Length: 323
Image (cartoon, rainbow, N blue to C red; front, side):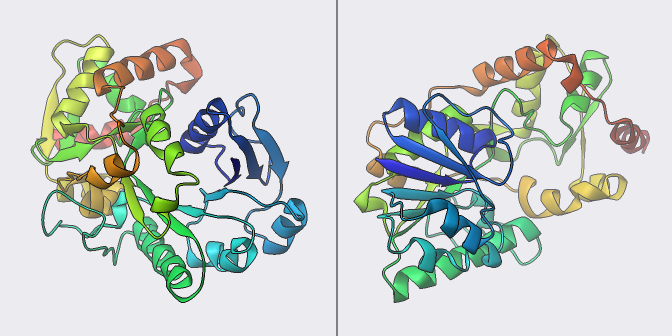
């Protein structure tokens, strides 16, 4: 297949591009500047501003594609011209959304693709909902071959999947307590980027996926305590000190976390993956979080420049613990 990625040179997109190229697809990645991550062998780079329809049309010329994947649509303005631009030159337009579009608190579990979408406050998710609704209208009223793919908290070796990042690891290794929101028992889903790519790439060019939304998650369910404990084990810390504080209390000390805690991380999230498994028969995640955490710590330990401690955050943790 001929596949066009709009953006897609970041952590998730670059892994998906490498997977698609490895499966023999002809992959082109469009970015405004040099890709943040090296592109895999066989992936063609193309330089253009994805958010400038005229520049994008000039860069693409008369090329047609079996699938176009938009990794960088964050507001309706980012996708407003895409039905006109791509409706006649691709058999499938895939919009990368997020599982954060689903209403919190979740009315019922597990979450399916038909669960209510509602995010009136959390800006990132609210705008993704607006993009989905805009593109769905283009699908319903025209002949726009839309598929919506929703990842949920994807990570790879470069990402420590907790809000405190390296600061949490540094405190664990120093024997200092780390703050975990709530009581640490709410459930969360993590997906390694390689597993996401293995599930996602077979959806490209798939006629049965046109008109559908698909939650592309691994089904690897962990509590937030388990996530911290698994990272600690990978960091060589046998008995980390975890201390629990209410999300509201944390937000008072760390205002930048208020929105994501209140409207995302504090809520239990369990996903029904039956639609994904029906569309991609045989898919099962291969990277456990224990393995993924070891990759993360090995990468950070090999790159001292990444091991940056947020002293303001560390002081905020100390203030929470003092109270």
